[in-house]
Image (cartoon, rainbow over all chains, first blue to last red; front, side, top):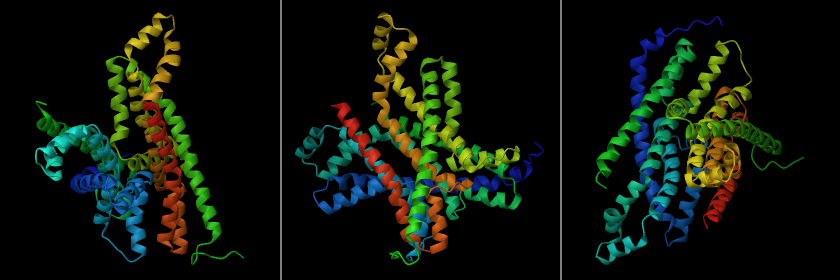
Length: 220
Length: 218
């Protein structure tokens, strides 16, 4: 093995890498929030009385869950691009990840809502709450607790998936690494550093979620 | 002469995509097979070993669950080429995917072993079964039932994640569709076909798994 590891360029561009790590975190948080919201809407849409709404939600969920995230990203970027809808890379990544997350979270919510007896919703309604009120004040807080763990996993998953951004030209952590690699041709060193940064982000996120859970659910 | 349904897309291109879909199946089934065997062994070690072993295995496997697969693929690929042992894309892709699968399956398997009630295992041992007999005839069937749907979930996610092996040059379904797109410029149609292929691979299995889970829960 006559390869000499050269870590200097990596250390020199560490600030640049860490800055792009912020983009990674930003993209994952935005996609997660949008995905969660749509996922919740999809869950309700699935039990809608209108046939078309039910069908639409079902199709969304099945496509999101049964095709690769990379395919979804390519579809939003190049597929829509080909029929004249050209979207910025940043927004494409957010759209694809939110689409994916919404499908998975809709299924997770289904499990969470199943755990809440329907008598609770009925009693809330009979106490005079509207449907939205009884969901927001009675059912969803309990569902949130039931889906917290899968939601955390989904968030880490979304964070890892933002790395696909490098394939559509987004300069998040992986995209930036790709860019720096093309300047220095130090693939191993740069991607090793990136792997470590991803690991640290994942652990930090996990810790953050634990802290929030502790704050939210203590005493229960 | 065959009639061209799409402007420049020919019927034989569908065959090309079909072959690529088979390659997607080939690499993912290989990885699922190898990864599941190792994953079950790791899961068993984590649930039966002492705390130290559990901690070490879990910490190592956790790395593979906390770093994007695409980075793992590029890292492994560049490492073996600087080490001087370049491997075909199929082999290096299979190695990385298998390790990734093992890391995911280990958790599932651990859950499976721990789902078997301790009293059941004590009962089997006191009936005279050896440790290995207990594993084979009690823990395996009971644990498998408990985690089979999760295992299917992992397997399906590996099929989908195998799309990432295209970054190190393996021509699987998604890469093949990109090659076709470069030639025909029929991006929308070809991507839709590729998506349908994935859907056709994944959807029936996920529905079957739901059905099995429902029947077992009855």
